[in-house]
Length: 410
Image 1: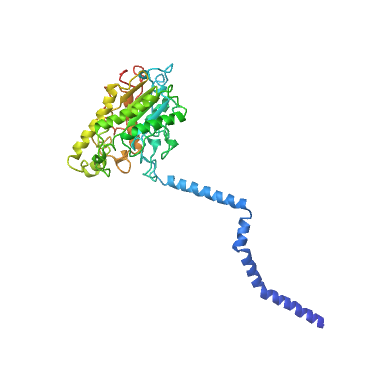
Image 2: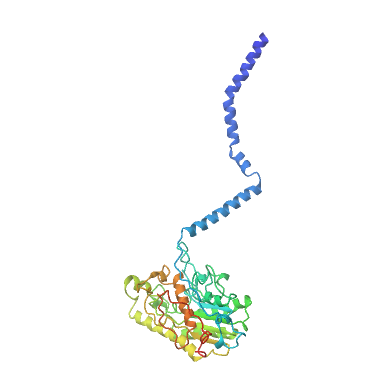
């Protein structure tokens, strides 16, 4: 009985201990189970599992950021086009031409461009959320290769319709290999053109272009920075005179002429300052930009002299040979106002956010008129492009005029 009692007491004691300590034991177990150390062991038992989780998280974060950037950003306005040409004029010559005056669009294998920020398409972003401080060579009106012709008109994308293997198109954002044969540099003057010509030749060699056999078209537009302080902006440089400007272009074309055979150089003469340099002042203030006595008159005079230089180089024929020539594309010569749309109203969609450089749409507009100019006879080219009329179509070569137009086939 005593033993029974004793056993019962013992049993009661055990039960009592269990009841008293159960809560503490459970809490200790809870704490132990959910400590950081235990949790980390559970989640990251191995280094490989940890790396997999980090990698997945990183990829997810990057994709999320990209998605948010573009889904929340509105695509910038553009202008696409189509070619509706006779299939016969879309074909290359039966034999590779030896004469630059018998060069069909489909014969051109290489496209290139030289110049400043206008040529490299500074600020011509694709989406509202993108940086305005970058260059977008893929949108360049001369040589841009991003997207299709229906997405945005550029001379390069038009030529790609004739030759899918066209070499030199620029793509993407920023300077680099993506810019192809667009060697333009923002902020440069005509003094930089000889250097650009040398860089271009080197890039062509590295890309495997035949400097002697492949037909090439090289377009040049320069002059906005040559105006120096006459731009009435932050630039305080002394303007480059017309003779120095001419010498610089001649030096650059001479570099090209020395190394490149089978080349057509297309010079885009200097534009009047109202279309770019003065656009902000004209649109928002209703007046032309001034910054000193007779600054407007001096600027107009110098722009006119720069423009004459392009025609002098063409007409003097100093570079002409059977397989090399220079042509001026003066489709902007008589445009003397900021951009107006088809209704006649000023329209800032033509411009980047600084109302100076071209937007993606502005590049497309200029690209269309440059292409059309290339097919117009020298001496009869349009000099006042109706830039705001988006309905103007892309021109086609014809059976009567199947060639890129030059002085000797006009």
